Length: 86
Image (cartoon, rainbow, N blue to C red; front, side, top):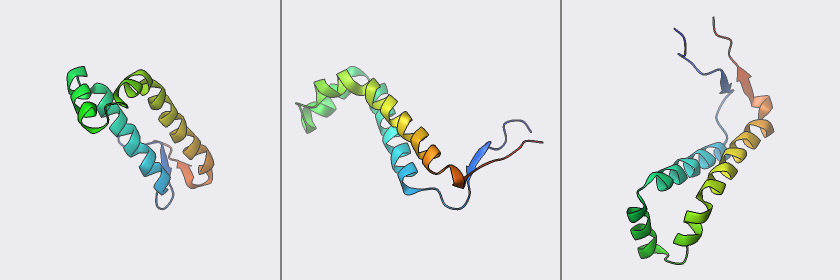
Protein backbone atom coordinates (compact mmCIF):
# COMPACT_ATOMS: atom_id res chain seq x y z
CA UNK A 1 0.00 0.00 0.00
CA UNK A 2 1.68 3.27 -1.06
CA UNK A 3 2.36 5.75 1.71
CA UNK A 4 1.82 3.17 4.44
CA UNK A 5 5.05 3.58 6.36
CA UNK A 6 7.68 6.29 6.63
CA UNK A 7 10.88 6.13 4.63
CA UNK A 8 13.18 7.22 7.46
CA UNK A 9 12.95 5.78 10.98
CA UNK A 10 15.12 5.88 14.10
CA UNK A 11 16.74 2.66 15.21
CA UNK A 12 15.82 2.21 18.87
CA UNK A 13 14.38 5.07 20.86
CA UNK A 14 14.02 8.55 19.39
CA UNK A 15 16.26 11.22 20.96
CA UNK A 16 14.68 13.43 23.61
CA UNK A 17 15.74 16.58 21.74
CA UNK A 18 13.67 15.42 18.76
CA UNK A 19 10.53 15.24 20.91
CA UNK A 20 11.28 18.66 22.39
CA UNK A 21 11.82 20.23 18.96
CA UNK A 22 8.65 18.62 17.55
CA UNK A 23 6.63 19.80 20.57
CA UNK A 24 7.92 23.38 20.21
CA UNK A 25 7.24 23.30 16.47
CA UNK A 26 3.67 22.11 17.10
CA UNK A 27 3.07 24.75 19.78
CA UNK A 28 4.45 27.50 17.55
CA UNK A 29 2.29 26.34 14.65
CA UNK A 30 -0.84 26.39 16.81
CA UNK A 31 -0.01 29.88 18.09
CA UNK A 32 0.61 31.11 14.55
CA UNK A 33 -2.74 29.73 13.35
CA UNK A 34 -4.78 31.32 16.12
CA UNK A 35 -6.82 34.30 15.04
CA UNK A 36 -5.10 37.57 15.85
CA UNK A 37 -7.64 38.56 18.49
CA UNK A 38 -7.19 35.32 20.45
CA UNK A 39 -3.43 35.56 20.16
CA UNK A 40 -3.43 39.12 21.43
CA UNK A 41 -5.75 38.24 24.32
CA UNK A 42 -3.60 35.26 25.30
CA UNK A 43 -0.37 37.22 25.32
CA UNK A 44 -1.95 40.32 26.84
CA UNK A 45 -2.83 38.33 29.95
CA UNK A 46 0.40 36.35 30.23
CA UNK A 47 3.14 38.66 28.97
CA UNK A 48 2.00 41.87 27.28
CA UNK A 49 5.51 42.96 26.30
CA UNK A 50 6.18 39.66 24.45
CA UNK A 51 3.09 39.75 22.18
CA UNK A 52 4.31 42.28 19.61
CA UNK A 53 7.74 40.65 19.46
CA UNK A 54 6.23 37.19 18.90
CA UNK A 55 3.89 38.39 16.16
CA UNK A 56 6.87 39.96 14.36
CA UNK A 57 9.12 36.89 14.72
CA UNK A 58 6.75 33.89 14.52
CA UNK A 59 7.82 32.87 11.01
CA UNK A 60 11.50 33.16 11.96
CA UNK A 61 10.92 30.97 15.00
CA UNK A 62 9.16 28.42 12.79
CA UNK A 63 12.10 28.30 10.36
CA UNK A 64 14.62 27.99 13.20
CA UNK A 65 12.68 25.07 14.66
CA UNK A 66 12.55 23.37 11.25
CA UNK A 67 16.31 23.89 10.92
CA UNK A 68 16.75 22.37 14.39
CA UNK A 69 14.86 19.27 13.25
CA UNK A 70 17.14 18.96 10.22
CA UNK A 71 20.18 19.38 12.48
CA UNK A 72 18.90 16.67 14.83
CA UNK A 73 18.52 14.25 11.92
CA UNK A 74 22.03 15.12 10.72
CA UNK A 75 23.58 14.76 14.18
CA UNK A 76 21.84 11.44 14.81
CA UNK A 77 22.23 10.20 11.22
CA UNK A 78 23.86 6.94 12.31
CA UNK A 79 20.64 6.07 14.16
CA UNK A 80 18.35 6.90 11.22
CA UNK A 81 17.60 4.11 8.75
CA UNK A 82 16.01 4.23 5.32
CA UNK A 83 13.22 1.73 4.69
CA UNK A 84 12.78 0.70 1.08
CA UNK A 85 9.21 0.36 -0.07
CA UNK A 86 8.35 -2.75 -2.02
